[in-house]
Image 1 (cartoon, rainbow, N blue to C red):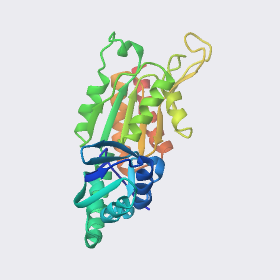
Image 2 (tube, one colour):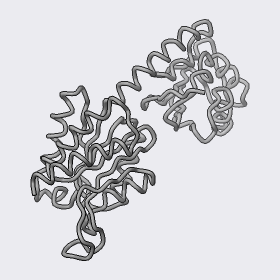
Image 3 (cartoon, rainbow, N blue to C red):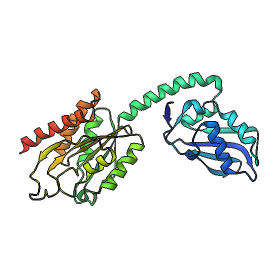
Image 4 (spheres, rainbow, N blue to C red):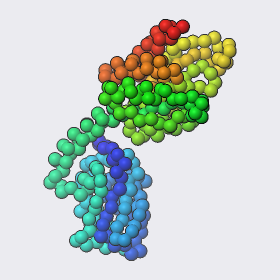
Length: 294
């Protein structure tokens, strides 16, 4: 079974359907059975005039389970107590859900179009990026975020579409929640800057590891534990992790180091290396950068 992303177009609207004492639970059960969608993944969300709206609560559906099912769905609903339909009753929807209304003879051609659309969509999503800067000093406005614009300018030249996320405070749970939510939206790449240091307040690496315990987190500089501000951690690390289909890259805060990491990332992405290889390539360039700075 191949699931196709609905891209937030999740509503089916049935027009010219007349309800009188109908059981919305039984309606949802019927829709679930006909369309092959789990009962917990759909709701009857609105009834107004002679229209009824059904909302699909999941990101994707199996195209084979919904193609051409419109007539069967209407017939099944018409057999429920308290529901009446007529020759004008119809189903409207947007995006992939519109396949419900296709003629069965069009299914083969529709599947070919769907496969092409899914392939194009997958390639397009790989080129979408969300950037999060972290740190209370940036979130509170004390320090300007120069990293996000620099990343956007660099990645735009490589054909990426870059969006800025909110600046995140140094809180593991908050950072992890934003990373997870963004991955669920289907972006191909998430880049964070800052919060990877050896101080207790730095929580970005911990947030990435909470989402992907197998994330690669090589160090780029090491300190003596317990000396100065390094009482809890002895090194600055980066991270390369994955949540769902989204690659997460956690980079240091200084803009020159961010751009060094981005250059290494751009070199590595086309060959699709594993997390460890990509992380070590980025870390290696950053170590060289830091050595020159020192």
